[in-house]
Length: 236
Ligand SMILES: [Zn+2]
Image (cartoon, rainbow, N blue to C red; front, top):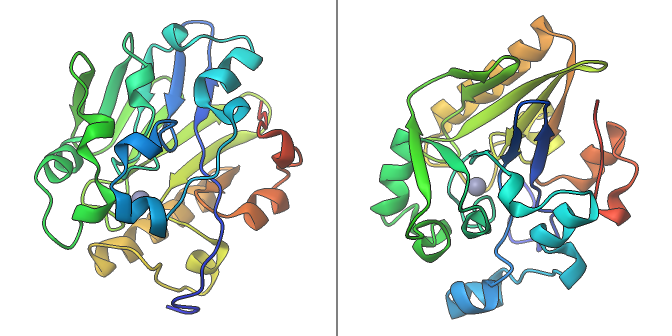
């Protein structure tokens, strides 16, 4: 690890996958109701900076989608900043790794602070558990990448023009975690974490494509994410 204790600002994301047959989201970001749902001490230690036009439902509206259009949501994991707006998608089926859901519901003390049950355990939401890897639709692969959390999963999407887009989620936060390699500040199992990074690297060695890291603004800019200030980027 390096730079321990340094406070940084990090982006949160949700990814919309549009297909003729379905509309899918990967992750739902931090809750728009974080001031009601996040514990007081977390509100102080990890405040969310979000304007109303950055609320996930408003962003979807701005590109012609409503929350009820979403058929599937894949949560890379259930840390509060990746499933915060699950409650907006009552018509969707949620795909979450089996171990992840079990740990999110009954976490050990070492992993508990990042699971906020009020943001994902919503009556009426349909969770389907995933074990291991899965091709959920043609060209949409769930790749198990545990280590950051017990049941973390990444998603690889085969795009028409640009090859595979690997949504690493928190399997890789920052460029340094791949290139160092440096362990991130947050993981439950270092050995599994390292293997997961290696697995994603190998996938990209074998397949033409790009990887999106979860919380690195600098990395996103470097892979062509030019419209960060508008908050929306398109890959085709
Ligand atoms: Zn996380």
